[in-house]
Length: 165
Image (cartoon, rainbow, N blue to C red; front, top):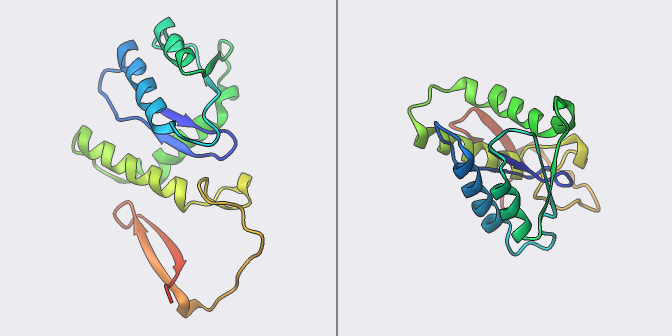
């Protein structure tokens, strides 16, 4: 299950399960609320499709936390396009390149990719900044010998950062 903040594009991914059901989805609500507690702008609305796993208990659990729900209209996958795009991104840029050896391995790879996605990967909607970074007032320039290369997701993805002074 994936939670996506529409304004920042930050992603929160739930742990995986082989058999998702309504009880598992409700449990993910509790974990989501714990992860987003204490934020300046807590989640105010959750949009979801009309899967039968999104039960009255799911809606009640969110409403108890002052989070409104909005079920998307029937047969309207375009209205959930940003989440669908993240699913495609993680499949193409990450999961299709690994042979996964169980739930724990899958969760580890997904956690690492989500960390990369939220802190390093640029997003065109945010002026090519990652979701968790603040928008800068000015742009710095520096030489290539001041760069260091960092690897993510087992070396599959690389980013370049300025070396510490």
